[in-house]
Each structure stands twice: as C-alpha cells, then as structure tokens.
Length: 414
Image (tube, rainbow, N blue to C red):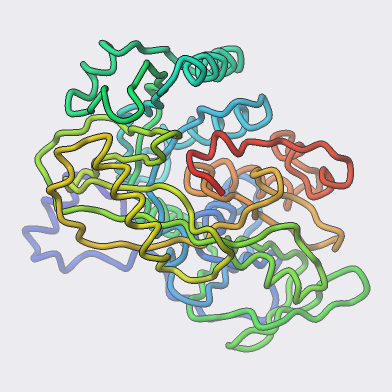
C-alpha cells in the first residue's frame, strides 16, 4: 500500500498524478472463506480490518449489494461522541472515541476528525438538573464533561438565541467530541482492509442462506454461492430482513432518520449543538455547510429519503435556535435507515446460530460506534468469546430483562 503524505502528493503533482493506484482491490468472489461479512459500510469494513490486522484472520470477504459506504455510513451527521449515561454504553463509546482519535494515523488516511465539542442545551431548571446528573455520570465513568451557564454558552455560540420560546438555562459539553468525514472513515477502513488481504466485493447481494442444522453453510449471492466457516451481518436497517433468511427473528424495527445541509458559510458554528426540547442538532462541516438533524419519521420505513413534514419540523427547530440560519437555502436532504432495538441500545455478538454473528440495533449511534464495533466484533468472531465491552449488548439480554435504555442519549425521539 502506497503511503499517503505531503511529499507523495508533491511528487505525484510533478508526475501529473499518474502514479496513484486504486485505494482498494476490486475483488472477485471466491468459493470459500474463513469469515464472510455482509455489508461494506463502516461496521463491516472495520470488522474486516481488525480481523485481518489484530486477530490474524486472513481469508476474509466483505459482500456488499451496492457500492462501498453507500448505506448509512454515507447518510448520517458524522458526530463522534461518548456522552452516554449508563456505564455499559459509556465504556463502549469511549473506547470508540479513543480509537477515532488515533484512527487517521493508524490507517494513514485523513478522516477529518475535528474535536470541536458537543454542547447539549437545557431549557428549564428541571432539564438542567437532569443534565447535571448526566454530566456527573459521565465524569464518574471517566469521560470528560463540563457544566455551562448562560454566559459560557453565549461565548461558545454567540449566534444562539438564548431567549427563544424555551429559554436556555444552561447546558453541558463534552469537549473531546466532534465530527469526522463519514465517507473518509469508510474509505480508510476499506483501503487498509484491502491491503491486509480482505476481498471487498461490491454489487454482490446476499439472497439467501443454506443451513446445516444450527450452522450456516453457504450464502447464496447474486454472483454465485459463497461458503465460509463464520458469517457476520453488518447491514444496518436491513438486519431484520437478512437475519430472517437465516431463520432468525431480531427484535428491531427500521425507521428513516433525516438530515440535510445548507449552502456553505464562512466558519460561524464552532461546536456540535443539540437541544432535546426544541429537538434539533446542528454542526458546521469543513466545507462550510450547516449540517442539520432532528426527529425521526414517525413510522417504520426502508426509504432513504424521509418525509416533508419531518424536514419542515427540523428546519423550524433550527430557525428558532439560531434565527440567522432561517435565511439559508437547503442544498440537499437524505435519510438513513436506522434499526432500533426495544431499549435503543445495540445488539452485537453471537446469535443462536453457532457461526453467525450480528452487529445491529445501532439506531442513531452507528457512525460514532464504527471503530469499537469493528474491534469488539472482530475479537468475538476470532476467539469465539464475547468481548467484555459487548457482553451487555448481547441478544440474550432481552430474555434476561437486562435492558440498557439509552433512548435519551440518542439525541432524537424514536
């Protein structure tokens, strides 16, 4: 793999950029693999990368029905944070954020990580007290957090209307949180995984599975049958559909979560800003666009576009928080398909089928979980033992009644 650097860019510029090679191999499907991962989004590619580089598994294929990173990985608001309440969630997402902090160096790829902070607003004394409890729990879990008063918030976001319909009483911030370029994360993992020998096979849809008692023997794909010792499903909102083809019913439902970006501006918003009451979260990309997210569509759907009333509600919420943004024109809008579990926490690890593993139920937190999701699932697949960070998120927790309700930390209603 050719190393990217400033010197390499300068050298290729002198050669009219004729020396660059494809970032990853366009592999053809083989007949047999040690591990087959279904889904070439962030979680699937990260799992393949960590399997090949940390767990020593070399014969790996990643099957993608469309193009690499064309699902939820390319359809989110690119926020990276670990400001979760419960110890189980906090430990997992903090591990992911720490991996993000070194990911660009490890993968030799600029993922455009910008740790500009994540600020959550409080619009009443009651909410301020709840957020104080939230911030304190973060501190007890070893995660940075700081309470802010109105003057602190005014200094950080001077364009914010503190006396809007629900006046801002304060808030709290995680300063290490921020955003990363979502496409770059997928490309970086794909490039590194391909260099480690992983076959990334695009336009290869898994149509069905052939089972032998409690094991999957073969995946029937649009490009022929593929056999493997172990299979992993990393297909976001389509997890329930694909698992059903293996005879497994998952407790997830899929909804459309919208986002949109405005025309670009000069730097004006220097943090990720969220409000659970007015119900919107916004940030400014490195290209200058204002990235807007908010409530999910109120019904189950596999559409990647969302509905107009939700878009209007999100835009109205942002205009109330930051009135000067009301003049901006929306350039584009999209939706990702979120798979929501009953307690709004992920379902990852082993399944009743002895050689099938899953990574699903990420809801609105899938992007920020990519490095840790891949690292912990790779360990589980390779060793057969559930990673310590994944044990609380096993499928069996619903039978045991050990739920981890992180709905409030999701940032949106669902």
